[in-house]
Image (cartoon, rainbow, N blue to C red; front, side):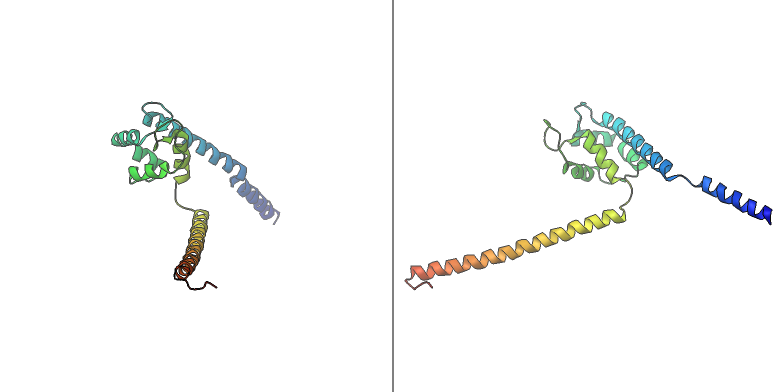
Length: 170
């Protein structure tokens, strides 16, 4: 019986030691993220042909034609089926200072690639739902205000018409 208890204690301790430590997992994830960012930075040096610190649509297209971009991004969990659409999404972010509109800074490119990795999480979907609901609420408020403005304008116009005809305005 004592041997069974000792075996149980030993197995329990071994199981605890076999479980990955949360701090260690967090550190590993952080290191992996840093390594991915470094790889993206290296790729961006290749994409940014003029080394301006910004990526233009032409530079990205030229790099895509070399056949390197899609495969590399797929290894990061980014499945880019349409590079032009992907770049247009990036263009909605910060533009490069002193560069023509439509260019994307290397740092923005890296940050957005990191954000776009993998699949959407429940949190991502909840944030999207919240934003859509807020947009719908703002649209409804705008429509209400437009109806109010239209009604007030119609009333003022009616008063002006009556006044111009000499009808007493109340």
